[in-house]
Length: 104
Image (cartoon, rainbow, N blue to C red):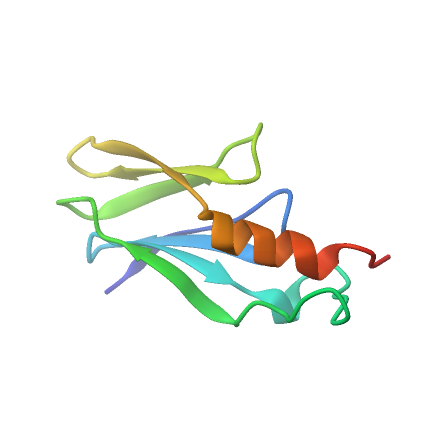
């Protein structure tokens, strides 16, 4: 597997996307390197590492990008021209939002 792209979420820098030649797109939680303060009183920190592995492409994936309008939407592009739009699951979204609430 060769990673062809890494993209950090512009709104929540603990979220990152990778895409690769094995036809997958992975959503990662990188909370340990996040600039956001964590408030353990509100919610436990989401687990570190890959959150989701999407294998909807049939060819190597060479492009992944976050939406500039929504922090929870991203797209991926494979060599055969297939473009897919994805949503971050509610479970992941709420764990991030709750762990930040009241911090700062």
